[in-house]
Amino acid sequence: MSFEILHFRESDKILKQKKMLVDVVKTLEYLDTVLYEAPNKGELLKQALKDQGWREDGTLNILENRRYQHKGFKNRIAIEGYIGTFENLEGIFRLQVAFDKQKIDTSILLMNSLRSFDSPFGSSRDLVEWEIEQLEPTVFLPISVALFDLGNLVQEPELKESMPR
Image (tube, rainbow, N blue to C red; front, top):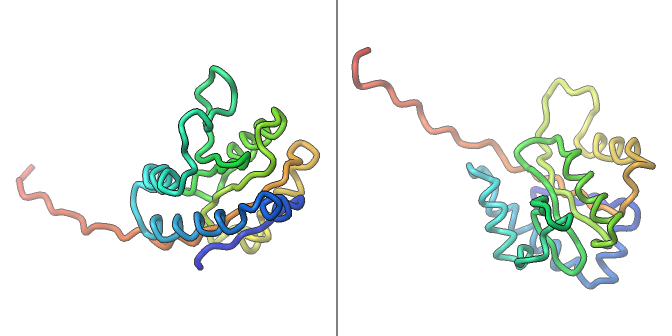
């Protein structure tokens, strides 16, 4: 596996209670396979979650009459994340709003583990643990964070201009 799952506030117990832990792990494995070194991760993420049954119509809305949607939703578990970068406070706050509205019981946040080499915070795992702790009491929902190592995007060679300027 080139991803790691961190559980906070007994999210793993909730996933087990709902008999969703195996489903979640299989979904994360599928995402890892589909997204590794792929361009256009956003569209691939949505398609992969749809393939795994996490994007059923009518279940993704966070607020009534608004376009805010989760990336995935199944059995009162929401998935959020923009895996193009490490930063993901917006996803955490979307999940907290859904939890406050009693639409979800637990959540999964997808994050890219790749960060800047000059970060003073140590490993991605250390930083996630620190950030989750720092967000209390504002963010208090049960949450699992999936840190993905999605490799480096293979760059296509630059094309030389064939026409003179």
